[in-house]
Image 1 (tube, one colour):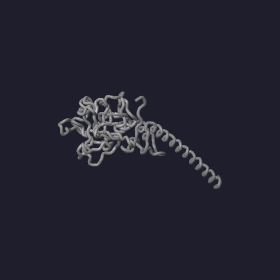
Image 2 (cartoon, one colour):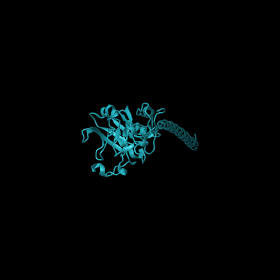
Image 3 (cartoon, helix red, strand yellow):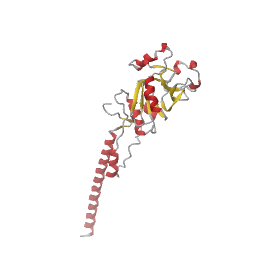
Image 4 (cartoon, one colour):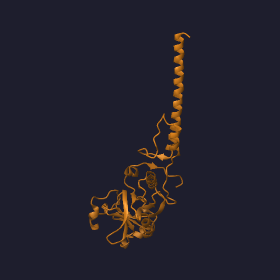
Length: 266
C-alpha cells in the first residue's frame, strides 16, 4: 500500500476508535448518573449533601463501587401512631441517621405543637405527651437568667430556649427529680407543677390546642405519669440529648443538618 494511503487508513482507524471510546464513556456516565438520581429520591437536601451517601466518581465508577451505594438506605425514627410535625420527624430522622445522640436516648420538644417525644438511641419511640412551655415566644435565653430570682424575670423573658442539650436526671432544691436540659439557663423537664390553681396548668395540658400551653418561666412541664413511666426510665443511668425545636427560625439552620424525607403514611 502506498505510504499516503496507509496514513489515511491509519487516521480513519484512530477516529473510529476514539468515537467508540467516547460512546462507551458516555454510556457509563449515564448509568452512574441514573444510580445517583435513584439515591437522591430518598433524600431531600436543603443546604448540604448528607455524609451518609458516598460520592460517586463520575466516569470512573465500577459496578463494585455503585452497588454498595444503591444498597444503602436511610433509616427513620418510629413515631408509631403519634401525630407529629414535619420538623419533629425531620430532626428525629436526622438524629438516627447521623448518630448525633451518640448511642444515647433522646427527646424532641416541639414548641409549636407543645409536645414532647422520647426515643431510644435507635429511634424507637418510648412515648409522647403534651407539654407546657415558656410563656414568651422566642428561641434564646436571656443572658445569666439562671442566676436571677423568679420574681425578677419579666413575662417577655420567659422563653424555652431552642437547641441541642445534653440532659441528665437530677434533683432540684426541693429534692424532686427533674431532667436538666439547660443547667446554666435553669431550664429542666419535670412533672407539671400545679401549686397555683389560677394558672390552671393541668387544664391547659388537657386541652387539644397548643395555644394555651405557654405558661412556665421556661421549663418544660410534662404529665407526672409520663415523666415517671417514660422520661425517668429512658434517662436513668445515662445522659441523653434533648432537641428543642425553634419557633422563630428554621430547624434546618439551627441544627445545621440535612432533612430526611418522612416515610409515607406516617
